[in-house]
Each structure stands twice: as C-alpha cells, then as structure tokens.
Length: 244
Image (cartoon, rainbow, N blue to C red; front, side, top):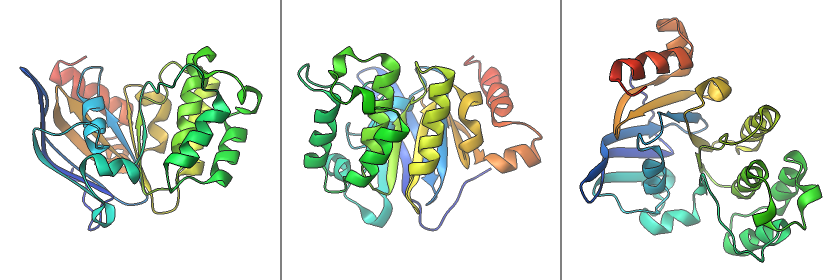
C-alpha cells in the first residue's frame, strides 16, 4: 500500500546514510500528508533515529532528497521550522525546568507562551518548574522534552521514542498530548518500537528494518484489508524479515 498526498508536509526520496562502513539508511522513501500522525516503526537499531535526525537537519544524508512543507529550507536551517524531540534531550547542569522554557522562547520564533503554559499544566510540570533538569527522573525528562517540542507552533514535529522509559499513566498522558497539541494542518512523525501502546493514534505507518523501508500503509486500510491491528501487521512483517 502506497501513501500518497499532493502536498505532503514531509517528503523523502532515496535517502541514504553511511557512517563509515555502516549503511544506516538504504534508499528510504516517505511521504507524510498534512494533518496526520505517522508512525515510524521498527526494532532497535533499524535506523529510525538516523532518519529523524536527517529529517530534522541534524545530520547530512549521504544521498537522496528531503523536502518540507512550503519548500522550507533543508539541512541545518530546517531546525528553525521543525519541532524535533530527541530520545535524550540534554541540558546544562545549572538549568531548571523554567530556564528550559525561557531558552526555547528566546531561541525559536514559533514559540508560544500560551501553548507552553497549557503543556506545563497538561504534563503536570508545575511542581517541578524550579527543579534542576539533571535531577529529574527519566519519565519527567521525557515529559519536559515533549512540552518544549510542542511549545513551538510549527507544521512538522518529529518525536524519537517519546514513550520509552515512561510508566503506563505517563504514556497515556504523552499520547493525549500529541493528539491535543498538534496544530491544525500540522503533522507528527513518531518513531517507536512500542506499537501496541500508541497505534490507535496513527493515521499511517512506515516499517523500517535494517535501514530499509519494508512496508507502508494507512492504519485503517491495514485493519480493513489485512484484518489485522497495526501491531499484528508489525509482528508479521518483522518476523518474516527476521528482525525480531
């Protein structure tokens, strides 16, 4: 099943990335329609983080093209127009939660204090606003990273394993935040291997294995045409690939 759209928010064609002798991405193609939440699914070391970093302009592809909505600038300039939430967000030791939001407000023109205030409430960060970030638990750091990312009102969000290390209640809070805080017409690409926890929010999914895109489809069509949940399709594809 091919996913097509006349005006995608993100379009990737023939993306390759090598790190010395390691071939991390192998001819990846992807089109994410406007207004959708897409899942980038695959086991650990499948190339998900490399793909997101390339899309966010943090690393230079070896080959291939990346195009954004409204022909936004590619490469390092993409960071100004894309909300990227890494799996690990690092901060200076002196910085507390309030400082982090202040930093984002000064760094990004698309920062919204109204959105930030809502996210602080939704993610229950109020009680930690003066806490040093390096003293927070992993789950709280994940919530902070998500809050900072969605405090920007942009057209494309890239989230790298946002559920990793979070308790079940925290996972539901993260999922609800993605649904509530994605602006109208914006799209979100979420990488994860925790498919069952989050598949209900995906409009479309892409399966990545050893740097190759091995499957893509609309979630509803997977359920209707294959008679499977996204997780069942995921397990079938990757067991056949020998990846899990």
